[in-house]
Image 1 (cartoon, one colour):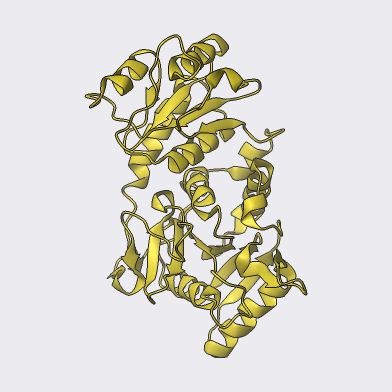
Image 2: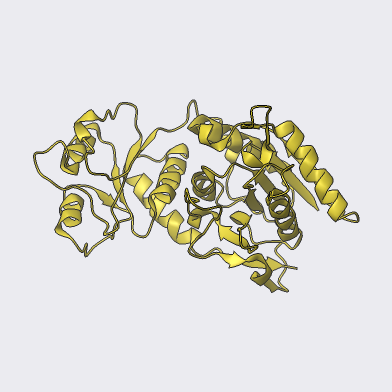
Length: 342
């Protein structure tokens, strides 16, 4: 088996300095990961091809860094390994997972994000366990797609579909997703997944990209003033909703989203509400905003919508084409199966 190991930084690639603060160090991480894996699996025939496009804590990542990550994957597309493991920090893990789920849709091998709650030389780390679980899943021919594997504090090793992964809470060491499954429960089938030709050509897409798309993501909160927002250079806006799928709908007020929608219409920039039902909104506030031009994205958490919209813009979609691609992509991703074919 051949596995590409792509290191981007984060806690799994970090170590504590003399001041006690953790800083990313991808160079030492790759040695630690492979040496530990070889000690635990001395007869494994897996070979790793290592790439280090980034060496940052994930809170410092930018859209340009996402481009560098995608360019690294594009370089190996003509000779794809059996799977790809991406070592990534925990702070923005769910955002990168959502983006990759859309940007790499059609790649015929599994891409698994791994992270850690502590550096690899810390006895409390789950980084080695997460990495080993990812290798095992690839060796068992995990279904193609973007995944995250993570051992929670209770000892449960869980597999998540990338687009469903939720952010780790401030008071937690654990990751969750709506469809998560224990790695031990992932189904197996006798049907062998043969590596097919990729349905995407990342190099061709990225060769036309001069800079990363700019998508504005807004959280709903009391006091958000839309007259403080500049739309210059944006490809799209995605706006979060409260738990009832609502946002401020006050008319003729800088605190009402109608002001933003008016600016977006004038600039011909699509503005999305996520999550928000396509029809039959429960409250008049959401109904009025949709009638005024806000585009509802049903069922999509805000960070997932952001990742899918960003990827759609990367692929050159504009205007209504963004909406069509994002909705179709979300529907397609939901058909991804938790199964290994051995």
